[in-house]
Amino acid sequence: MHLENLPRFSLAHLPTPIEALENLSRELGGPQLLIKRDDQTGLAFGGNKTRKLEFLVGQALVQGADTLVTVGAAQSNHCRQTAAAAAKAGLKCELILNGKRPEVMIGNPLLFEILGANCHWIEGCQRPTKLCELSEQLRAQGRQPYLIPVGGSNGVGATGYVVAMQELAGQLSNSKLPVDHIVFGSSSGGTHAGLLLGARVTGFNGQLSGLSIDKAKPELDSYAEQVAQLANDCANYIRSEIRLTSDDVTVIDGYKGEANGVIGDRERSAIKLMARCEGIILDPLYAGRAFGTLVDLIRQGRFQREETVLFWHTGGTPVLFAYANELMQS
Ligand SMILES: Cc1ncc(COP(=O)(O)O)c(C=O)c1O
Image (cartoon, rainbow, N blue to C red; front, side, top):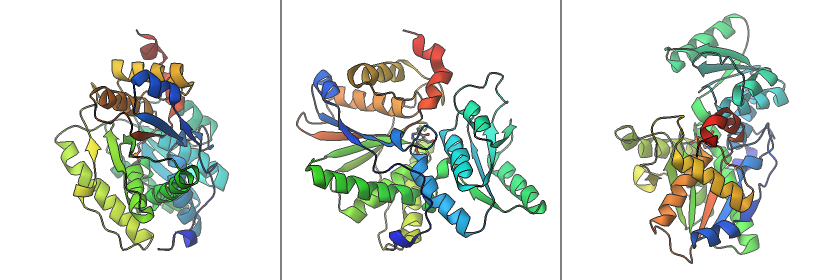
């Protein structure tokens, strides 16, 4: 394994803190809850993409790229972080975004503009096709694009979460905190893949569960395979012999909600519970949905009172403001 020698561009404030959620643990009657604050990675409101981008931008710079090109939803946290990473690294940024350019710029679209990204809003057009077309156009203009997949989820990006697991292992052994379960929102799979591989690398022997954000059956059936494949691509990239299969991947589903990007009572009450017990803000689409799932699992008795569960906060807070009306509903 040669993690230390991989191209990496420093973007994050690390290590991110771990906090004990004592009020919440008491409110819910156990288990003991901890939170890992990757909403505090520091780059343009933080979030899980900062860690992936350290390795993606590192590779882009080594390859002589002058532009980062990526794709995402209208409120994509990944696109916001990519635009910020490009600014910091002195690169240009082209974003391919789903939908019409919003009339009122709020949340991440506002930040894409402030960060100086060139935004291509597309409707009814396949994002991968547009990604290839745009890259060809840029090359024809003499530019050197570096393509980043949705969510920064490939073997290179997932490396950020192998390193995150090493960071966590160090923090847990220093503080002598036992952690039985780690739970986190899982969507394009890079965070999940990196954490799983990192757990093998560090010998972490608790249970890792990805809480599916936006998939239901039948799409979900292939998701565990996709995560295992990403973990193996990452293992190749970091030159590790470890290999994973879909049997190693735990995905908890059934919490997708009405539709992607639509928030319901579970997310609303989870966001308020975390805010009112601990003063910590979650976003409605990812961390809020994941935490709502965790609360439901706790209420179903899925964890023992004396166990410790670490909730990995993956960021996304700028999206909160785009959902003000939905959040104000009682
Ligand atoms: C805030 C937030 N949390 C979690 C995720 C899911 O991470 P991944 O795509 O690596 O599965 C995302 C993905 O966009 C996100 O923006």
